[in-house]
Image (cartoon, rainbow, N blue to C red; front, side, top):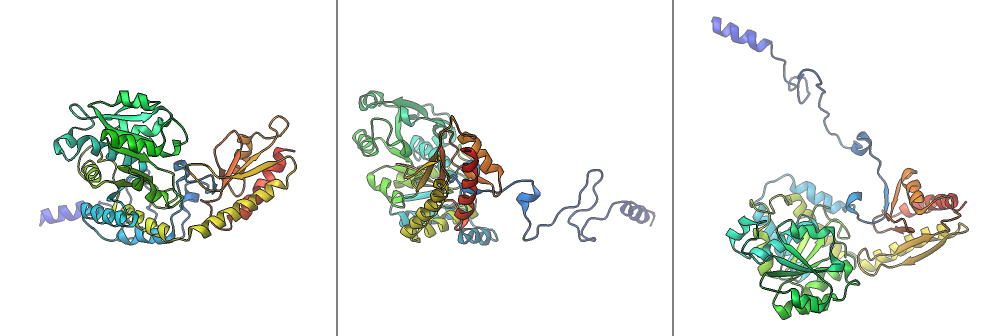
Length: 406
């Protein structure tokens, strides 16, 4: 009895948990704050002191990529309510994507960067599980990846991070000299196809000549929709796309397409296995979201969408041209972010604002507007905007330009 009384006395001194009071947690000493239960309609960005903006720049990672369609968001939400075997999901979704894109095989990756990492890892290891476990140590493996000097840059860290050694060349003769017993892959940056001596079709031909797999990084090269089919048909053994740009899928997802044997090897180096790609996880919601985004993208009326972009950019151009001293043109980038783009210039010597200052004025205003981050001119696109936002953008751009040349 004495023991029971001691126990009751002890329990009476412990603070009650929040279950009895309706709170999710109880008092927990100094610094304790009651938990806030999420409710629909909360403006979390505002609570955190963050401003949202109209995206007139493009699907930049720093600008959180794209806005996903409601159908993709719904697919992400509904698949979050159940468990599923992740490897089976990878396989089934990959089979469906390969069918849609008429290629041998596919896998959803952690963005285009992740696609490059598991892709080159698979090329270096093949189906050798011992080799998979030794990465990023590439001793004894073919580990050299040849790239054109004009295609080199920060994104190639996706290759070197998993142990690949980069060999840069300029000419076909350089490539002939660089190829050796350690050559694993020829890597190509699609948006740099207009740079360097060797173009995409010749790059593929050289790969076939030397029986070396070729990889094409097409991260931001949607639209046009045809690019989803073009480069695997051209003969590239592996092709990668970002999922959170023109495809409007999850920003942290991507697509790796290509030959079955290379996709199978890439998957050995990908999560969920504990290997060099373990940290490149893609959760079930993102995998399904990527599939649904692709289905929506393939089914949409691309001509109608293009006409909308043209109408929007012309509306903004008309507002800009109404300001004396402004010169503008609508052009189409040759490769990458291939959408109608408005370029605006004015006399920088006699104007009130530089291009960078005008851009900051747009960011700081109401509504906040982000444009292409260039200090050489003002560039505006509409493909990441919501329909109707072009009116607010046109008005605000006109106001800033009037100040800039005033």
